[in-house]
Amino acid sequence: MARYLEAKCRLCRREGEKLFLKGGKCYSDKCPIERRPYAPGMHGQNRRTKVSDYGLQLREKQKVKRIYGLQEKQFRGYFDDADRMPGITGLNLLQILESRLDNVVYRMGLASSRTEARQIVRHKLLKVNGGIVNIPSYRVAVGSRLELVDGAKEQLRVNAATEAAGSRGAAEWLDVDLPSRQGVYREMPVRDQLDSNIREQLIVELYSK
Image (cartoon, rainbow, N blue to C red; front, side, top):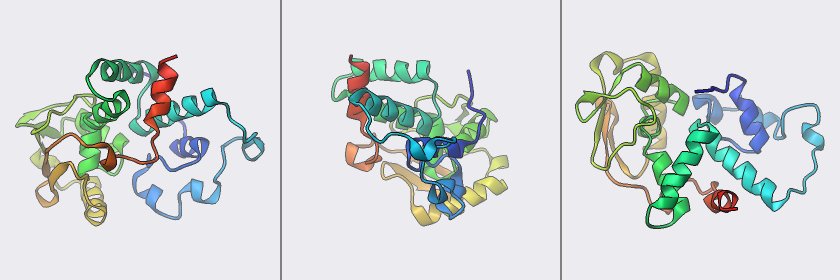
């Protein structure tokens, strides 16, 4: 699968808000968007401010793709799954994205970013219900127990992530025990528990054309 190899902070500047792609840096005064809150490039400060409805929809889709580190084909597949499910398509999409294994590891506070969580999963450092799973896109079922393998529990990056997470708190739909590096995916999140800056209805409108 194709990967984005350029500076991740450029993505935040392009969207005009923090996407929290760089872990601790995003919470510090070193975050570039704090100093340059405009799009990257020589014309970043001079771009027109009027955006069409299609432009708003496209930017929202791009933003959510970047938050979760997905390519277009995979993201569209998730939308199609959400559209076939009963209920509200936009909420279904967000719940599918939140149930990805790499995202759950990040939400638990075992990694400082989703990119780091993806590395932990791929390097076979995580167990789901007692068995190692190394697929970042694996969808975690409600009630599943996640735990780092013994050799990873005291890694420096894990310690740094859990220390930061301890001050911010874990997601409300997870039961997390940071000292033991484990937790349970207790329930699907409801909309009020998810990022209020995401306007999922714009994505539904875009793909419904």
